[in-house]
Amino acid sequence: MRVPRRGVLLPRAEDREQPSGTFERLAELAAAAESLGFDSVWVRDGPSPGGEEPPGPGPVFEPYTLLGALSVRTTTAALAVLPAGPSARLPSVMAKIVAGVDVISHGRSVLTLGTGPDADPAAAEWLAEELAVCRALLTEDLATFEGRHYRITGAPNRPRPVQQPRVPLVVAADRPELLDPVARLADALVVRGGVAETGAMVDALRRGCEDVGRDPGEVVVVWTGRLGTPAETTAGLPEALADAGVGGFVVEVDADDGREEIARLGSAVDAALTAASG
Picture 1 (cartoon, rainbow, N blue to C red):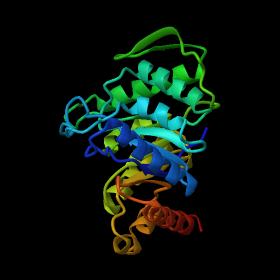
Picture 2: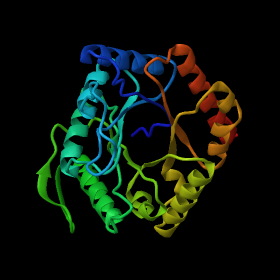
Picture 3: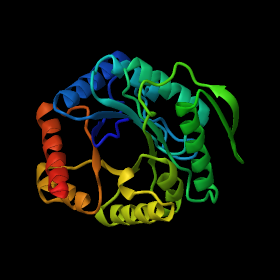
């Protein structure tokens, strides 16, 4: 099981008129990032059921179809979707799709879950059950789970994933009150925001892990966002995030970024992670 720590988030590239041209550009970016040492390629999910602004008029691929295509254009990078919010897919369907991508990519898939809106008081409960269903289907031959929101009985998930003991389970969350299921069941937490907000999430996750008797080091905190101009990066944002407890980065790239810009982002991430570990 490989938890990504140095990834790139591909753009939607919606301004390109031809879908085939859009895909080729995304594949070029993915291959460039992999050749420069990034360990994972992330794509954006579609609009969430309650929230995100509708996409522009350009092509927007179904994300797991896109990952399947990128799996044959890359060889080593892990493949993941960055959720825009709560998934529109049942967790059992998510586990089935991700297991298939894991087989096609020879063991490089990541299962990611998003979280519900602030107004949902049961968001943590939903997330806990989704993680439990996915974990069961990715590890058991015939999975059974019964909760308040989901139930599966003797459910097979074949072909089985290549990764052992299972595919990594990752949650993208933005509120400390959602971190109890992350502390108990996930392998990584994806966060956004500035140093103060990130530090607060790291501290809350550590407390959650300690409450359930789990080593906080078993859950990697991954920051995602745009590192900005070279001057902004040099100002120390990556290092400050690493000092706050971030153990991985998924940096956004633009459709027009070339190898030089992707290499710059990789160097900034490497420097921050090396400084933090030292």
